[in-house]
Image (tube, rainbow, N blue to C red; front, side, top):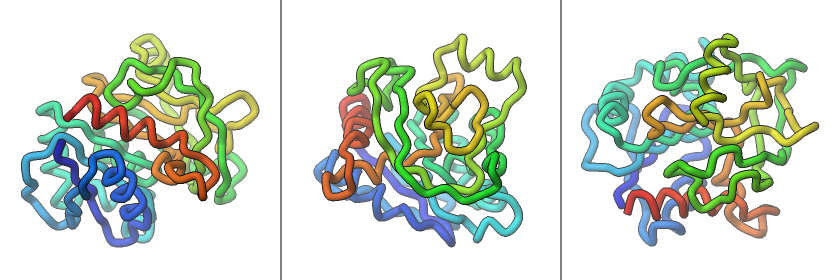
Length: 222
């Protein structure tokens, strides 16, 4: 399995993702700068969290037009797995690789705390190591994690089994529609999620429930 982590100006979770991947794969991933327009042969591309371009325009809006994103779009169309976490999720919606949008949190405050999630879909390359209905605990750290889409889109996500993670009852930190924390694209090879599984891979951090996501990818893509 060959994986790469994209680095934008302002990214701050690329090292965490790289360490989680290295632990799962047994070797480090490629680190790709946002201005790179060519990528090696890859099975997985991760767009990490952070504050790409300082979020000066709108979260993910500038990063969505970086040179590397043109190549990521082509790879996604060809079936390569793409994982966007937090700001990475925002970038993927801005790049129209995923439907909907991420808005300001309902209370208009930045939120940084652990949150309990329910695994809604275990039949994906990202979640095959989980059981459907499993409760997992990942940190959240965002100011614009309020997922929004029109009712038709939300119904389609529900009907197609493309809602992968949902905030557990009483745990929704941002007002996201239908408690959505993570979704798949139509081809099911692109996952965007607001919580940080890479920050739940070490017992010293309080949870190891994120490991199964990276192990799922290794088992699916190796």
